Image (tube, rainbow, N blue to C red; front, top):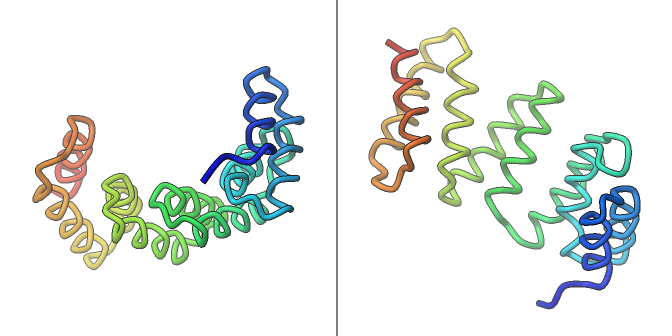
Length: 155
């Protein structure tokens, strides 16, 4: 699918440091149903880039982006936003979606989140998640270090 003119104009404005103009282009494109503008617009709202931070709008546009193109990266962004709102249940729901899509980062984020809980159920879940990670032979060095650090924390 070719990129929309709004997306291209937004990227150009962003490259020139004109974040408010980039936001405007993403917003116009998203309002017109241009799917390539959904996630970047959500990112603008989430990171207060060219606009004020607005977690509710960020969630709205990330969810629209996910419906159009289900990617684990979008799930991770949604989970992070729910954590900002202290909604662990929804964050876990979105991490699990990302994990089901094969995302190792989501698995680590979920394990990290649970490692701060003080319950045997959380420790058991973290242990299972870490074993799942260790069974994956495609971990990069950073991921392996994080898994080993979490295992040490459980000990």
